[in-house]
Length: 185
Image 1 (spheres, rainbow, N blue to C red):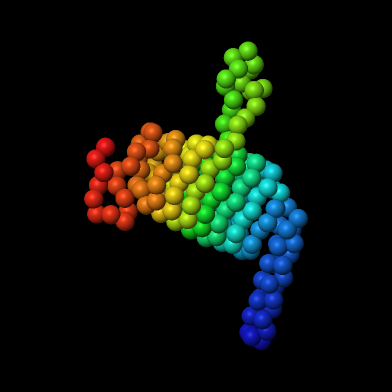
Image 2: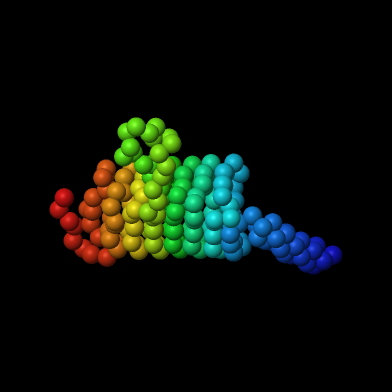
């Protein structure tokens, strides 16, 4: 009897996965299961979102992209905000309250209200194996290279090299993960 219950539970789990895939297939640009969605998240423009497998979208995560690619085994932080054009690699950790803004408002024309002046989009690239600490801000037009660590509260305004550890506003390199020496600031 116990064996039949386990077989039934296994079959039910597979049916649930197939049904989820069918629902997600019509909602998203591309999705590879499993993807983990917690409660109370917001996702806009779903057809422009591409999730690889094992992506976690936690509570209060706000995604409103023009285009979003997220690599496998990536955690998007609780209460994080992602907009514009963003590409996130695999094995990336995004801490809580992080803003990744792959677009910016035009401010050049003083005779036009900024809310009506449109946006510019350069996009953001976050490569594999990156850790972005809590309350960090990543601005449009930047690339964070493989293996970098973005300290809590950083504001990333320019490209970050491979394996760099950065802190501050604006973000400054304090050392490299693959070197024993520190950089004098």
